[in-house]
Length: 123
View 1 (tube, helix red, strand yellow):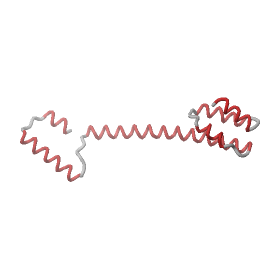
View 2 (view 1 turned 45 degrees about the vertical axis):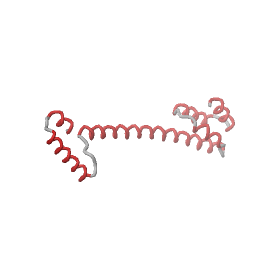
View 3 (view 1 turned 120 degrees about the vertical axis):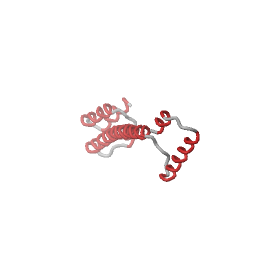
View 4 (view 1 turned 30 degrees about the vertical axis):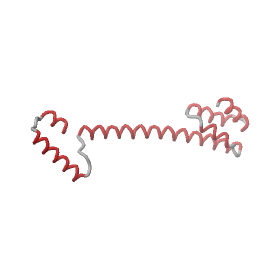
C-alpha cells in the first residue's frame, strides 16, 4: 500500500519527511517495521507452501521409517533377534518401492541368512 501511495502521490520534501516520521512512530509503537499488504500476502503464501512441503517430506520420511520398522519387526517375529547390520542397510534405502520389495522378501524368505544374502546382493 505504501509503495502504491508513494508511486501515485507526489509530495514535497517537507511532506515526505513528515510521512517518514509518522511511519517511524508507528513502528516504535508496534515495535515492528511496517509491512505492506503485498508483503503480508507473500509471507502468508510462503509460509503455507513451506508448511505443505514440510508436511509432505515429513510424511514421506515417516512412511520410510515405518516400512523399515515393519521389515525388522517381521524378521524378528519369524527368525528371532535381527543383526544390527540389517537395520544399518535398511536405513540407507530411501526408496519406498525398494523397501516394499524387501518387506515381501521378509515374508517369503526361508531364513534370516537368505534375507541377508538378498539384501547384501542388492545394496
